Length: 55
Image 1: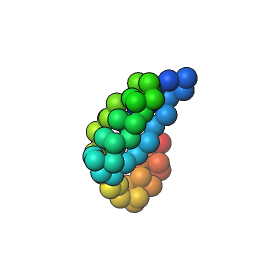
Image 2: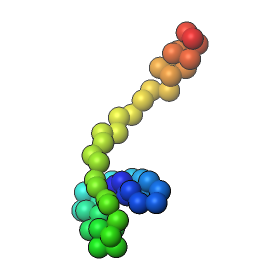
Image 3: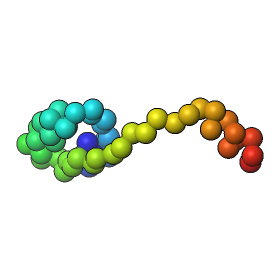
Image 4: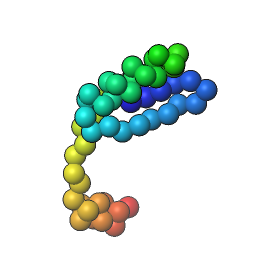
C-alpha cells in the first residue's frame, strides 16, 4: 500500500483484504492511498555472490 501525503509511506501486506481495509481507512482520513501489487520472487544468494565477484 502506498500513501501519499506530507511524506510517502509504504506498507507491505501479504493479503489483499488487509491492504484493501488499510487503503479504505487511509482514504477516510483524507490521504491519497493506493494499492500497488508486486510479485515477490526468491533469489538464490549464490547467484548474488557470483554477480558481485564479476564487477
